[in-house]
Amino acid sequence: MDRFAAEIERLKATNSYRTLRPASGLDFTSNDYLGLAAHPALREAAKKALDEYGVVGVGGSRLLRGHHPLHEALETHAANFFACEKALYFGSGYLANLALFSTLCGRRDAVIFDETIHASMKEGIHASPAERYRAKHNSISSFEKNLKKAREADCQSVWIAVESLYSMDGDFAPLQELVALARTYDAELIIDEAHATGIFGKTGLGLSEELDLDLSGVNAIAVHTCGKALGVAGALVCGPASIIDFLVNKARPFIYSTAPPPMLAASLIRALDLIDEEPERRATLFARIAYANEKLKAVAGNALCSSGSHILPIILGEEEKALKIASELQGAGFDVRAIRPPTVPQGTSRLRISINAMHSENNIADLSIALGRSLEKFAR
Image (cartoon, rainbow, N blue to C red; front, side):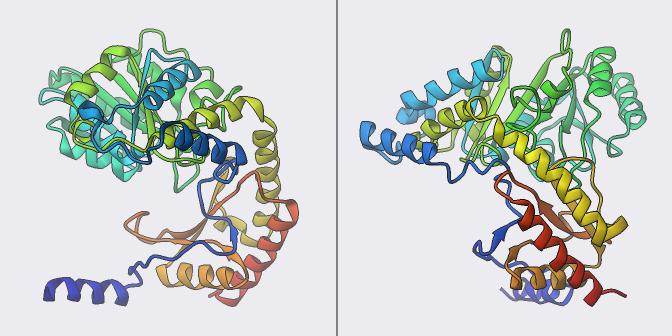
């Protein structure tokens, strides 16, 4: 046990130690972008499911008695909502990405992935036997260079892996150009829409809809995380029916996981409906994003790296400085967390400020004042 204790001491000495801290103060850190997590309609849907079916858990995997009518209803509803052939519900986004890459990417295949994709996608890629090619963040030339390498190596299937909206920088993938590359090099495209689902697009289908992507001739799979803007938990993998059926039969993270509680599926069906029923939440969110950019830029200057999304990183550099300023803001009643390596590269520790539709302009103005004071206090 000594080596584990020694590693904990090292983490503490380098400001890399992490502890669990309950939510407190005004939420400027979670992914509840539309404020649906506490929506009465989602609670009612969960209660109705409990009353109707009388079970919290299902006691088994989906293939061993754990498949519930509400799981099936959700997947049918999601396929219609996201305009795909079929959808499959996983207990978490991490499981969904682990299943996708470890199952679909074979020994003679290649995966070209953006260097800043989520850890769950990287874990799935590393769990697969496919050749791996790391592309520079949002660099089309780097993606194309690696696609050429994969094709020259005579790889069978070539997969492109990206997030539509990156969770730590808040910037967008160049999806139009990536789709063109996928078409040119006959590559499959996996888009993790986790932080765009429910927000972007005319009807909230994600950045693919926002950009009106023409996916004709391209095999595309989308992952729609359900614990962020949709306010519940889990993830939906949406794509061709053959892919979904293959995952049901071959994906170990799906086959050997106990099925999610049916009441979550019921709440998710209601959450998808609310995206259509309450578009004003998205409109409010975009108005608050614009206001937050103005207020935070005034106090943070170039430390604010905004790309126009609801994720506003303030790059502070050192872990210690990020921790101290986060602590000051928490003490002032704002739940803002410090993000440190290895989640982000060395020297880019930051505050990840997350804007949601429930914030008022006064909330944002008060945060900017408190942030300005903290930045001035710890300025070097």
